[in-house]
Amino acid sequence: MRFTKNEIRRAMLLYAVTDRQWLRAGETLADVCQEVLEGGATFLQIREKDLDPTDFAQEARALKALCSAYQVPFVVNDSVEIALDIGADGVHVGQSDIKGRNIRAMLGSDKILGISAGTVEEAVAAKRAGADYIGVGAVFGTSTKKDARSLTVEKLREISEAVDIPVVAIGGINIQNISRLSGSGVDGVAVVSAIFGAERPGEAAANLLRLARNVVEYE
Image 1 (cartoon, rainbow, N blue to C red):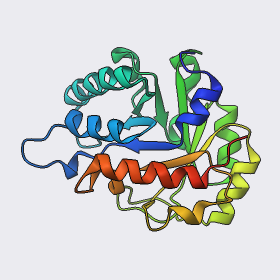
Image 2 (image 1 turned 120 degrees about the vertical axis):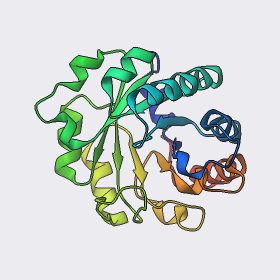
Image 3 (image 1 turned 180 degrees about the vertical axis):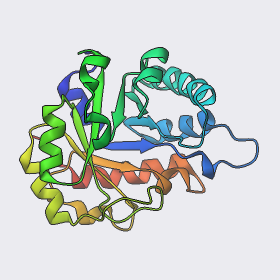
């Protein structure tokens, strides 16, 4: 694996998930992601549900090159095929994607596999399916996923304690509420709109990184 288990755990600290709906006239996704990486994002996932596969792959190639330059792990949402085709560091999938499919076998042992979970049972199933980390949420609600289940910080703690792989919290996290995750056992926060919807995405990433360091307790 290009990134060690410990490197993956530490890369969870500020996990940025793209959303092109916030792009302004003349901006490219790569431009904004460069700002975000300069601001301190430690992990990047491309998640663009409205792009066709060709455009998605083109964007993913550009972001992969960018992340390589910053030595930050880069994963593709949902598409194992595109992730492998462009040489991404891995893929992030949902619970439905691991039913009847061996994603780990498709990826190989040297790629990062992230899997979403909302319960202890789903987290355990994700680990069993070969996950390197688990994305858990939505902790504070979210506008980016209509069917997301709201999750209490207490439940988040239960999930974190149930598995021995990194857990990243996601869902409505911003500078106002991130401190509420203290003591939850998470290894980091995944953020969409609080970064990509910010007036200055790089500055937003820097502020969130600073606050995330107060939430995560490293061994």
